[in-house]
Length: 302
Image 1 (cartoon, helix red, strand yellow):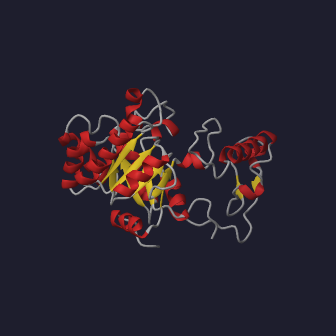
Image 2: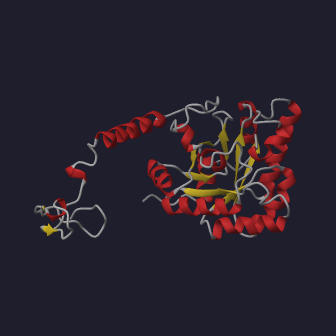
Image 3: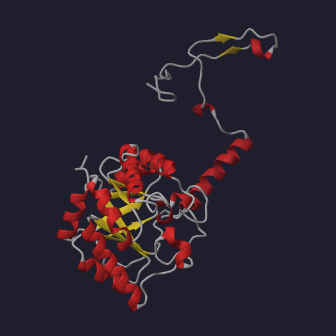
């Protein structure tokens, strides 16, 4: 296994110009696959509210749900650094509550750092969490937890006033101790300016190529939802089609009675004479042939 990625690894990547590969994960199986594929960072995003739970925003996601999914992902990851999102209203009420909830993601969820949305107004919150020895990743631009304030999922920083505010917020978060920053849904020239102004790495999503790394929702890059087609997403597979085809083939074989066949069924170790009263039940069950002995793990031959 390659060396574990830490926040110091990510800072070094920025210094040497190596792009950071970040992707979301919500369970152990996907975490294991994406980790093996070479992910540097796995984000357990509150986007799970939309892509896993079926909500139309991230707002209903709870702390308990985030802890649950973080723990699943950290069990599946080996090399990648795991970041957990602080969900809506888990850090906005008070600094003390923010530190406590960040601590839950680390102690119960096993993550290596946490992410929160917002700019200079949360600088003191970032300081408090980092004082508790919990690394913090910031998130600026299109911040999904502020969807109602923004009036929808709208690109941010297109005018000079907004752009200046985002740059000022980025500098404030860096000064407060954030180790990295997600820039979402901002013009690429603004993302370039922010990236060049910071010593900490920037991770872009819908922010152009000049960020220090990129992040996408795993279900989006794998093409699992054909109806979701935002401009910033590139599909690297069509799993919706592949899954639909595979499941359809399974359903067809079940309905035709061709699955399971003999190769996918078990046999007894010796002839068994059933003792029920019906003639059919008195038939002998053929013994398994040599070489079909089963090991202690269900379904694994020895």
